[in-house]
Image: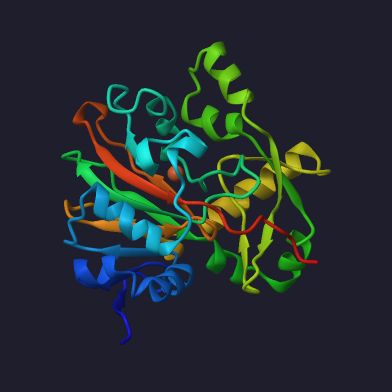
Length: 279
Ligand SMILES: [Fe+2]
C-alpha cells in the first residue's frame, strides 16, 4: 500500500497521512525514507508521539545517534531549547539555529536525518524554515554547475556562530574555535547519483579563492538557495512530528521569546555517507 501524502510546497516538503500504529510498525519505514530524501521535509500532523515512541520510530528509519556515543541526551534524546536548565550542555549553542545551516558540517559524516516534536511552543515566532539544496543546485546554469563541482569549502563553528552572536566573549569564541575544522566539496555527489549544494552559515571560505571573491560567491549562493520558492515554513502545532533530510536541506528557526521556554525534542540519525565530489 502506498503512503498517502500531499506536497506542502512544489520544491520542498510533504505532509504524510499515517496512523501512529502504522508509523511505529516500521512497515512503511523504507517508503518514508525514500519520500524524505525526495521531498527534503516530511510533516505528520496530530500524531502526538511521546519520547519513547519518537525514539522507536527513529530506529525504524536508520542508525539512531546515541548519547553515549555523541554526548547527546539520554538514549538519543536532545532537548532543543535556549533554557540552560533543560539542556545545560547544549542550550548555549542553539542561538546559532537562527541562521541557515546544515547540522554537523564540522563532522566528517554529517547526520542523515532528524526528527522533531514540539513540547513547549512560544506564543509568537519560532516557526522553522527549510530549503532544498538539491533543487537549488539543479536550477543553476550548467556552466556554473561545472565550475562549482570542483570547489572545496572550509566549514568552522566560529563561522556558524559568530554572525548570530557578534557580542560574544573571547571565551565563547575560543570554545567555538576548538571545534574541528572541515573541508567539504561545495557540491555533494550523493551515492544516489543526485547532487546538492553543501551550504551552511558554517561555510567559511572557498579553498584557493581570493577572500573577497569567496565571500561574494558564498553570499550569492546563500541568497539563491534561500529564495522563497525553495523554502517551506513550518508553523508548529502540538502533536506534530517533523523530519528533515539533513544531507539535502538547510534549516533555521525564526526568532522567538527566550522566556517562552520553547522546547522541541529531537532524535537524530547518524550519517550514512561522507560528502564527496564528482569523481
Ligand atoms: Fe540545526
